Image 1 (tube, rainbow, N blue to C red):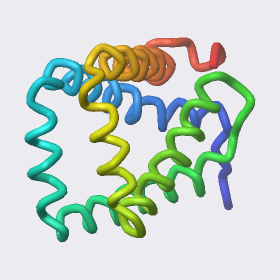
Image 2: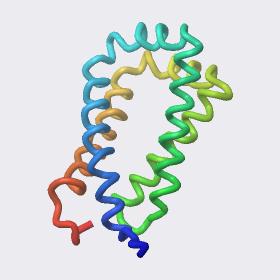
Image 3: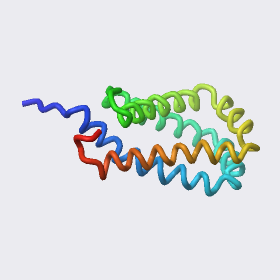
Image 4: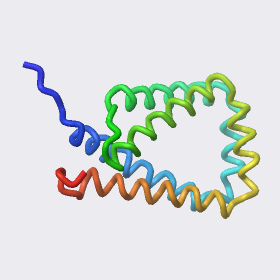
Length: 140
């Protein structure tokens, strides 16, 4: 007997993983922005690491895209968009990593703008954490 998972349950499951991940990683990036230029340069100096990271991002994004095709609630939209973002970012890292390098080099001098952007991502992570772990499942 095949048992299907409801769209709300699937969104909640993805939110349980993506919410804490986004919250922790983006908050740490905000804290480490002054040293991120060096970290960034070290990362892109290793072509194998860039390629492996691109492949893993593409795979992660495709998994979310394949298993979460729901766009009816705010949380569902955020999860789906995150999947597409990961897949696109991974593909760009594999195909044209210099585009990511140029974009990051353009943004690095604008630390306030970076903090605001990653602050928004931290808030999205907190919201997804709430949806995944705290909210009544019917409130999605």
